[in-house]
Length: 130
Ligand SMILES: [Fe+2]
Image (cartoon, helix red, strand yellow):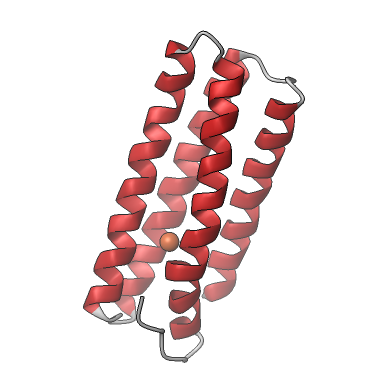
């Protein structure tokens, strides 16, 4: 089961890295940003739903599950703001790049604090308290 999560993590990382590279190289138009934003929202929704489904199946510790779900909600809130922030900016490419770099860093922290304990629990280990 955890290999599904790992594959989704890799897919998500690849999408963010490609977008970061193309943004920094200024190889994206506003419509490219919009299209990629839609892909990120879909990938995030699918991935978060899978993690939350697995937490439910696993009878995951309530405090860990609640904190993990809250982190997902916060991420989606920030992600949903990405497009409108870029569109409203006089420099949408740089604005989108700043936000994306933040999201990339946030996701790595989320992986360590929330996703890895879930993956450990799925493997039969005991999740570390957050
Ligand atoms: Fe997560």
